[in-house]
Amino acid sequence: MADVKFITTEVSTLSMLTIEQSCIYCQTTACHCPLTQYILNCSFYKLNLPFIANCAEMIIWKIVDFSLRNLKTLNSSNLLSLRMERLLLKSNLITYIHDNTFDSIGDILIELDLEMNQLLNISKWLNSKLIYLKKLNLAFNHLETFDNIDNIQLTNLQELNLSHNHINIFPNKIYQWTSLIKLDLSFNKLSSIPRFALMDMNNLTWLSLASNRNLTCK
Image 1 (cartoon, one colour):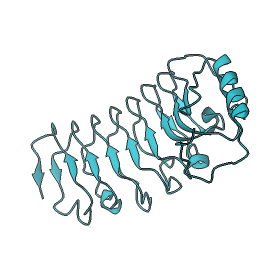
Image 2 (cartoon, rainbow, N blue to C red):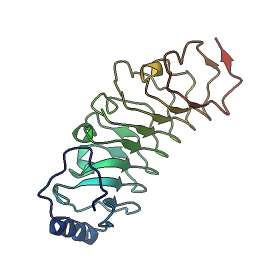
Image 3 (cartoon, helix red, strand yellow):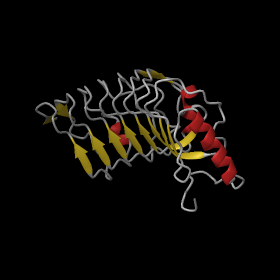
């Protein structure tokens, strides 16, 4: 327990008993909660979770896993008032995410994994309220564009995975995310890249454009 670090101020009144009770409750509702790791694993289950809103009151989870749950749309109620640093939503059927879905966890979320869903575009759910987001995984979706990101300030974003989509135009506003270290655009439908597309991205050390069309630099 001593090595667990919180992004926000640690709640000193959180007792071991409170955590144990929360984990026991979550286990009875078909989730798995390893006490010492702050991991709430609710993946694979197809039924709706009968959580009460404060199932894990006062806990900031290290990881909450909602993968493989056949989710088709996503809104804030799906998060069950849980707060977490890493949110895994892999291998669902998500086609639409409501605008304010992640607003309540924007002050602590550092990783968002939406790999292997069915997203067609990026809407207002991706916004500047995700102030601590470091890693965003959108691989294996159906994105045709990655635009409409003007004025979205993700000042801590370091890794962006857009591989295995259908993007045919290089997202030319991506240069505003100057903290990016890793950018993956492999296995898309890009045919050209603007000459100054990566201007000012001085922190970028890893870039993949593999398996696109015959790329040119204009």
